[in-house]
Amino acid sequence: MSPSIKIGRQELYDLVWSKPVVKIAKDLGISDVAVGKICKKLNIPKPGLGYWAKKQAGKRVRQTPLPLLKSGYPETYTIKGYQNPNQNLTSEFIEKQKTFESTDSNKITVKKTLRNPHPLVEQTLLRKKTYDRRSYYEFNNLPPGLSMSVSDDSFRRAIRIMDALIKALERRGHIVTATSGYDGYTSVSIDGEEFNFDIFEFSKNVVNPEWKQGSYDKQYILERTGKLSLRIKNFYWGQKSINDGKLQRLEEKLNDFILLLVKASAIKKINRKEREQREQENKEEQRKIEKVRLERQLELERLNQLFDNASTWNKCIQARQYIDAVKENSERDEVDSWVVWAIQQIDRVESTLQHPYDG
Image 1 (cartoon, rainbow, N blue to C red):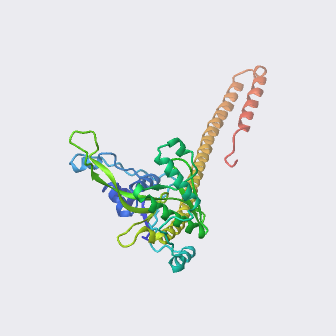
Image 2: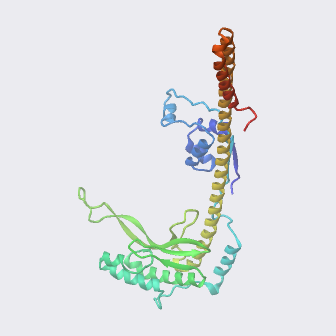
Image 3: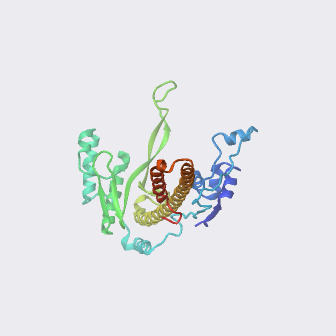
């Protein structure tokens, strides 16, 4: 596992304006998308489209200054070290499975002829016959079958491999299921994790013997190689498949594929835990940002209240001075009732003023 990297806001700003993000991402061991997200998180401007091309061509370019850091936003970011999912991965469950799969008595054997096939294998054979008749409507309404992508020449071998593998998985307590329909898939539950898997045959591009210059035929066509592979289809970290090799055929590697599924299960759990942790950290960061925003909003409201009170209080003072001036320049009998009314109004307004120490 590579060490974590703590990078400051100014340091990252200098980096993104010194070389393209793709190169920075390679140096930091992350994707260019991840660099962009970190810049957004730290409020760092990036060069626009065409910036590096213009600079390389000697044209004048403008560098956007680093803005002041917004209140509540972080000044640094820690890039967590990358761990190769297949490197030194171990657990009690994995070690137990390693021991089990390496024992000679647990070696999975693929029979040369198909006998007592698994129900899913039987259903797949039925689907194959229907597909060969090109009855797509019937094919889509047949019971579930195994996910296979092989040529007719390799089908019998592939179905025997799948039969042995599924029976071995179920003996180990793993549940294998399949869905119906033309695009159905085969799945297995390993330690609570669901994986889709299939068996497929590699192909290669070869020159189409019927192709002629100017014809509408394809110049190259796909040709099946006879080389088979078992692969996990919905797994995206590290090794995902076991293939025919020069020294060992797939039939001899079924224990390895089961161990690969077990490791994939452990990796999936690790990734989920890390994802949940990141989500929790993001929520906490958003909570802090929201707290700062609310504090600033409250401060602004109190400031506006202060200015409003000061303005109203000043008007009240002016009004009292005005009342005194009216009393001095008017007959007493004529102004008494008005003065009483005016003072009452000022008292009422002053009573509504919010004191600085009020909530």
